[in-house]
Length: 385
Image (cartoon, rainbow, N blue to C red; front, side, top):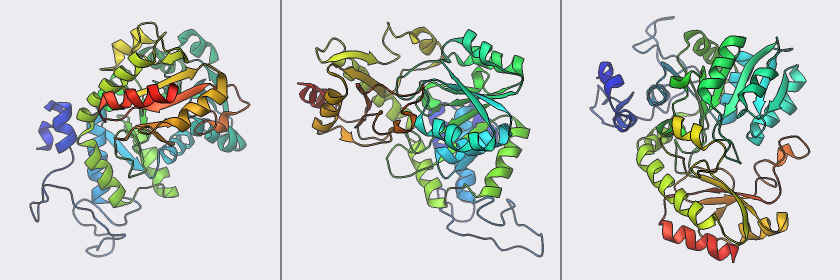
């Protein structure tokens, strides 16, 4: 079966890649191998699969990693305890003290915090720029630049970067292009196929899809990078448990179906917000006047389920709106079947306050779920009234 994987469509791979029936029992679902260690046939005599200790490898996690690699079109996948654990391993594998990282100027607050508050103390330098401007990215490259860290679409302003163009900048400079594909998911966007070296996911979000598990992943086709990532993950123990891996794998099976509904509902929400008297700006790459619309249309299948907008009246008005919704739950995170609303400046991006990445106080971010679209639009309009 494994030999046929590359020929399968996305939906088929989501259900079958890495998830063959159990050879002993015939179970069509990968078992949860709730074990910390494995019996060995003599000292150093590992059984089939080479399992010895679950920090290093676990069969449930292996199945998830094969599935994720297949969905992203990569040769290797590694699962982590969280998206930030994956980001930490990627950055510490790719950059050493004295090295330089280029970070998008509209990046996730946790990624900025990791660089600014943790790795900077370790001697890693960084520059924040608008990665939508390829010339600016090229100009930001220094002799010690090792990583270009790209989100597209970005969190929370839904900015778009040209992955193929940035891959060329990275290739010329000798840096590695890492693309955080959490917002787009592998169903909507394939960064490795556009030249990226590494794809990162917070699998907590759309891949898990049900707000019931925390995880992360790194996918690459570079054998040497995979080896480095795997070594550091094992050394620091940043691994998910088998039940977390199983939940993520279960969620990923329906990713294609969910992303279509997320996108449908997001488009209905955007239509309701554009031109509303209390909305001064809508951030969504599907809008023809979005500055990254043409690039997004070229490198994405659809435009996704994340929407942000600015509220007339500033921060206090935005805080009022997020407190008034009933279906949109006030909460951090995103990508679940339920709709969420948040205030980035006070919540997910509070760590960027006072930095060039600070989010304006009038911005509200929506993770549009898969509920009835009419109900979601009505809830927002009532909150805005």
